[in-house]
Image 1 (tube, rainbow, N blue to C red):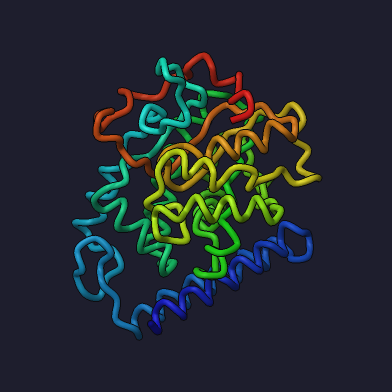
Image 2 (image 1 turned 90 degrees about the vertical axis):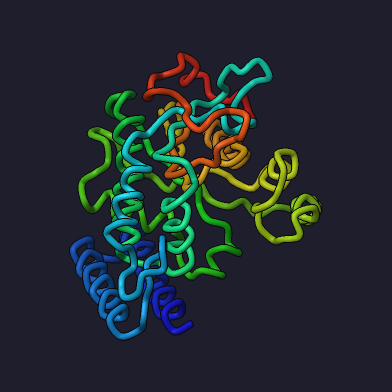
Length: 306
């Protein structure tokens, strides 16, 4: 419990610092200095409070060498995966929204991502950010310069529970290490939309079947109902005519990606596709998506309002 509280507190401070930087209230060099100090504090905390490998439970290490190798192997070859997300394909199988993922949500990738979301480990962040960066380079690089990478924001409930936004922490690391695709830029152009009472009630009813307050365990229609209208483009995002790629952590049914695409297109953006760190394989779709990434030919058409 001490480890969880300590790391969540540190990551919350990171989020506050970065929020100030984007708002223009914190100097960039100062923010980087604070990042480094907090990273060192996390590592020092790991020396004081016992830790174990997220993949196998080996003591005194956040990710052991063997699990590190397995995690890197799982994210070594990003692939097209939209056929694993029913909301991203038509009944005929034609892609509505092309999707690329670093690897399948299983084994060390799922364990490391889950542990990172819970505790915010620096060692896990480094490996997960590297995997996400590979997917970004493969997918976004095909679209040339000028592509805007738009992250899906965490929900308010998840932020209050964890104290930080896991995807944002990874993207900050990717950008700081110079791993963004050449000519692209990262934008936090989306935000949770304040839904009306009847909309919130509909979203809660959609989760009844899962018995949880999150999307985990929800079916396709339940996920679509839960996230419908949950996002909007920020008023000053300047998206008109911008070519955008949606970035998320895990692709399941594709409902969140479709909602993000709807919100971006409502703001005038042209949505090219979605990139995720992991995807949940459909049993009847096979483990792999395709041999490699190739534009579908429908990437520039968006989702027609998902």
